[in-house]
Image (cartoon, rainbow, N blue to C red):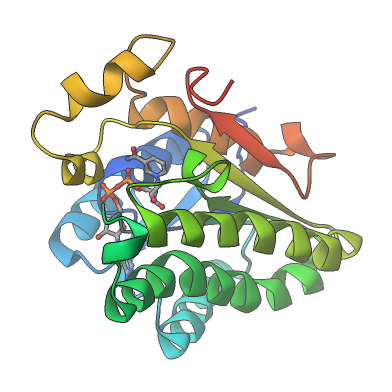
Length: 242
Ligand SMILES: NC(=O)c1ccc[n+]([C@@H]2O[C@H](COP(=O)([O-])OP(=O)(O)OC[C@H]3O[C@@H](n4cnc5c(N)ncnc54)[C@H](O)[C@@H]3O)[C@@H](O)[C@H]2O)c1
């Protein structure tokens, strides 16, 4: 039996990077996969490749969230796994962070996660089962001096995860956060073209993670292998924060 047989899964920001890797891995483990993103063409291609569904979805929109969860329930009748993966990265230190930039980053990375958890909670509570996985970062484990708003948003994800786990775990709904280190996706190019020269010497394992390295941890939290895990942070960082 595959690890996600019969599970209905929803992955935000699934058009590329880690979200796309999760979609592939989940489908290979028997899940029904629904992908959402603001990138329509790429999102549709990922959905097609896993035999799943795609819908345009801005995670900062309350009404988009209601429509997306209604769509999944209409298509599949249930929702077992939500991966709040969509995110944006901006390399700007605190003294240069404008209020506009603060809101932009907090809206996608923190408000988006809050809205996702709130919308998915009701059907999951009714089922008395579910797993919500919120993608934070090592920037949610320590100070992110060069990416102030991003770090604040990822600490918010970690804190919201714990609070939501206290509220939802009694109903059978587990909530955890995942904290990747440096992952080789398009997001990291925000650091600059020379990101490998700058970042790899700081990674004890000697290389950035692939999107699949992270997806395997997300798979564990999505599956019943993690049935007693809720309310905690899971690092996948090649010892960067050790
Ligand atoms: N790449 C890294 O080094 C790294 C490290 C730690 C954590 N993370 C986190 O991992 C997650 C996935 O990032 P990735 O590395 O795959 O980067 P990525 O940029 O390839 O993927 C992010 C996806 O989110 C989507 N997105 C952005 N704004 C959105 C919105 N408003 N609504 C819906 N979708 C939106 C993008 O279109 C994109 O497809 C993010 O939450 C990111 O913060 C990444």
